[in-house]
Image 1 (cartoon, rainbow, N blue to C red):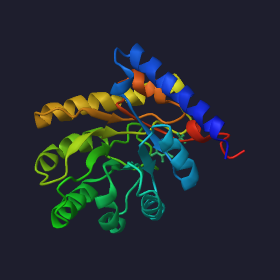
Image 2: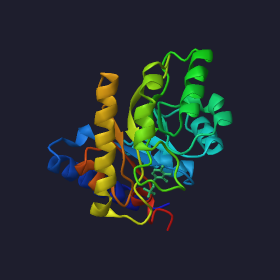
Image 3: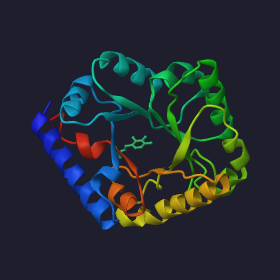
Image 4: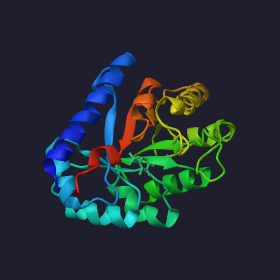
Length: 233
Ligand SMILES: *Cc1c(COP(=O)(O)O)cnc(C)c1O
């Protein structure tokens, strides 16, 4: 692996995060970098954690389970970032600090039940996924559907809902993604008002659009390829 490349990629990403945070009137530490490590080997992940990145995102439960085991000696905070199947949740939930992309009321209620039955004292924080681009192929609530579920969200027994998550459409890059991120922030503001409590987290922005997302208020950016490009060469 090319460790120098990994280090320079990381420096580039963290500089851009700091600049975008400053442009949005915030500081770099207001934005958490979640390094998306899916399909990358544990050796690369060890190197990355050695550079101080400890929030790691994975999509696939089996891969997550084996990596969490292989890296159990490290202070990793695991984030589940994709669609989580209910039948994989029992083994996944106790490992996670954060779940991005809970995409239906059915799954949310099932995870809440599971957190109760597993008696998790420190259950993962949850961001609810909103399909801000209204693409039929995408998971997530519609903005209206989410707001209609406010009472059920308020009645959860154990799972802390801390914010919302979205993905911009596949072919939008940079500033063209900003309307989708602005929409997520607006939906967050409405849901927070309905619940009567803040929802501080906005999980939005990937390699192609994390600066745009930060300008619209992202607090968590999920970045994979911008960190790992060229590392395998
Ligand atoms: C893979 C993935 C990412 C990271 O994508 P990059 O474009 O490689 O930064 C972020 N979020 C989700 C939900 C993903 O599946």
